[in-house]
Length: 99
Image 1 (cartoon, rainbow, N blue to C red):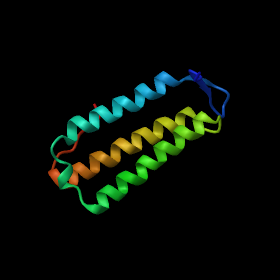
Image 2: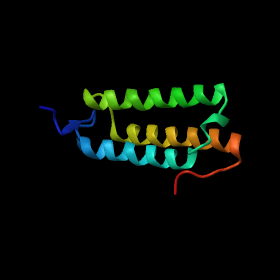
Image 3: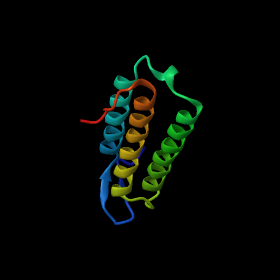
Image 4: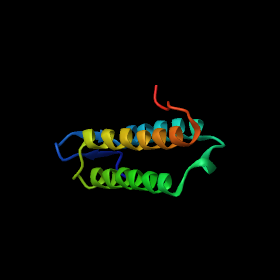
């Protein structure tokens, strides 16, 4: 049985479903905006996306073990989406993902 909540470093209880939903919303916006355009990204863009993705993974892992912080999680998601926005804008001339 999996826990449905985690406790962050500030002792805040966070619902795992909300974390998953937040990540899913970001991924959905990225998928919609990047549809059919992933081939335009350079190796450097992919490396930047990979680094941002690893930060999100590390934040999720930190939250899982009570070492993380919700604010850091939200900043990591924002940064991840921004990396995608910049990469797509550089290579396709479009500038917006987030509302």
